[in-house]
Length: 385
Ligand SMILES: Cc1ncc(COP(=O)(O)O)c(C=O)c1O
Image 1 (cartoon, protein in one colour):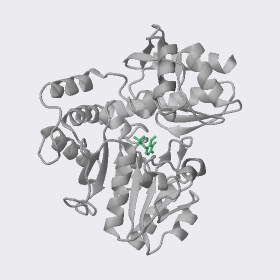
Image 2 (cartoon, protein in one colour):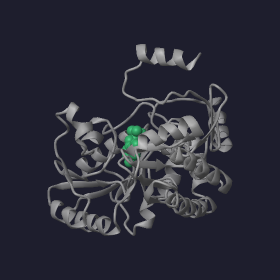
Image 3 (spheres, helix red, strand yellow):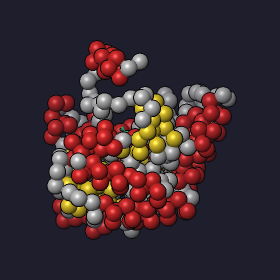
Image 4 (cartoon, protein in one colour):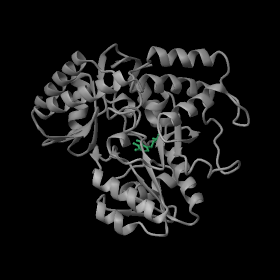
């Protein structure tokens, strides 16, 4: 089917909630994608931080394939080994508590909000401006962005947003606060690293008032910043965190991971999801998690990230570069959406704009030096066009 035919189908049959680029991808391998006309692209976006091991990583594919032929689904009324093993590994590699599985980042945040509200009945949830936690009602209510929230009012009550500053948080957290939810690095709004001072203030305020500190590591977790979890580089340990995107190695899975204090708040009947932690995605996620948790790969992310940030800063029209590891954004002195389109269509380079002048790069964690050099050359050509 031609691209024009796909576009006609979309126009007739698909809810128009996405502004798609005029490309149909049909195959992916490592950092490469191919479109339906046989053109090859370099992918510096990974879905949006999903295919962090590159497209179709053989060990993830093999784990999913083996499980596909054995058992695809049973309800959460029964046990399956992949889900139990994945929960054990996720907990052991992070907060040491327990795991609730779901299918996406927004759902992981829904679970976190319910957990926090049950732990401290009737309490408020505090978030910071610039946050993005997802599109479902609880997650949207935690996403203080006028354009995303306003058409869908009324939202869930009991959410408050403050400036992403230590003092603002200290003042805002009080006895009525059930949770503070933060992305250690805000992704969707342009890769803004929250300061250690702010995170430390949130930790202290939550401790003082018996509130839960919850980190949304949906985008910045799973090795993206050069440690398995972004919180490891902040000196602050949350009471719970949410994970999704790269967790499934390309398949849809999300998780709420608790520390010990909150591990037993949710009880049978409190929460659930039909597909959550299904054996195929859990098997794929187990493979992805073991691959990403390897110290060699995490060191590679730190090295390649630092080198990429330095090289990006030297490109024309790049005013500044921010981020950590391979979660990077460039502030430009030209329009980012037009650049992204030019890079894609002329240079076969997949990137993303998070704002009028902000270019975001989330390359595969496995990306090699030569691929980075190639990406930079293609980006330079798009910037100079
Ligand atoms: C930090 C963060 N939280 C939550 C979400 C929502 O995840 P999902 O789209 O899987 O619901 C996203 C998605 O971009 C995200 O970046």
